[in-house]
Length: 141
Image (cartoon, rainbow, N blue to C red; front, side):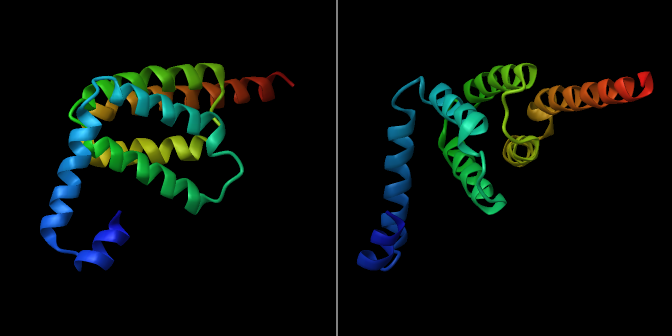
């Protein structure tokens, strides 16, 4: 769509604004959209980000955050994302802790520290728990 506006309309600001407005209207037409985006994100962390380059991971996470920015129901996305992240962390189904950290940082930039602090604390608790377990197992030997 960006290419179409650039080539056909010379990046006219009116067309860009109309496109952005129409997309936001479309995104927010359904009240379940934030939950669906959180589910899509969960699927990416479970399988989609597996065995791809760090640059590609960055692009995919950036695309998810751009969708998140269009949402009016950001709190619904955060609640769904938090529940799904907890599930991934407890069941150890995430394919990349580094990607999880990148996503948390991106959300923190968009939402602020207060909203993301629970997610960040949850992630850090699992990392600490894994480290303590590793230390315990090595001390037992």
